[in-house]
Image (cartoon, rainbow, N blue to C red; front, side):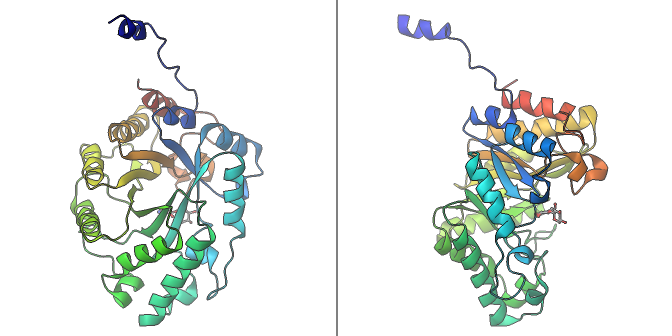
Length: 317
Ligand code: XIL
């Protein structure tokens, strides 16, 4: 047909030249974890603003930061990041409502029903405060061990298996619009830990527990084995949840680092319900793993080889 033939002469889509712009071509976001104290630094801000379409607070929305004393909330740093993002058209991931780490001291001393009420109140107040402003919340972070058993955190020991679904139900009531995620590391393929999380998500979907997404932190290294990475994302997606790469960083340098970044990017692009990638920082110099230079920009905000690999992958090369 003539009309169809015309299409073959249409110019191909122009490859975008930023991470966020390139990811947007397929309806995805490309985000970075932000530590608000660096926002005044010119290179930090210009890189963040140019390249990233989504942000997540590296620390300032965690329990110790938001509720330092019982029922006394401090949203100042998180609010600053949300306002910053909204003014620049960036979406925000929320990280994280319930986690065994970075709890304030007063939570660690609670037992039984007092801990349950504290957890519910924390979720209600924090998710409620940010309701309507968060694209996806990491409701529960890192609740499983490598062998697939539940991590023996204070939450698990005090509240038993039901605490995770309790957290999701409470978050749903506080912010009905955000996507609610379970987030973990060491889930970079099909293994005992990802199997256990898979069974939990399948069970939640079967019983109507509100879960919308699974976050794969993806703290990786140049020699990480990613042979079942995409397949693992796909099996979760097939349960009807979104999947997101939430804390990507890759220790190493040069070709090996670039290849791992490229594989992760291509895996997400290959899974239609993988709707975004977040790297865990803007620049190597402020990375929590700065000793292994795991990010896409060096300490002078220069694009690394891995940046080129990710950009090319996002542009379908
Ligand atoms: C890390 C931050 O990057 C550090 O600044 C902080 O000292 C400790 O936490 N998994 C997570 C993140 O879910 O919250 C962690 O972030 C990295 C591991």
